[in-house]
Image 1 (cartoon, helix red, strand yellow):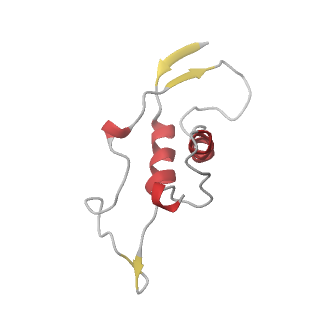
Image 2: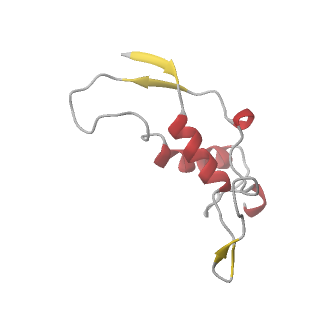
Length: 96
């Protein structure tokens, strides 16, 4: 078993869960590039520790397993803190 700081998949999923929305104007995306698209900033990324367990089972790789559960994890944390349970993405506090 190895343990190392890593969290690219978690950061990717967290950014999309919190901010992943693209407004359209007559079918065209309003953000023209990443300078006007809100994404998770590096200073907003929480410290994450990932433990990788050795296995001979497929699939292999560890880059994306954190993406699907991070949105529900944030929703559960918000509910536990009494902030309400978000039901839509992106999760923004004003929508809760």
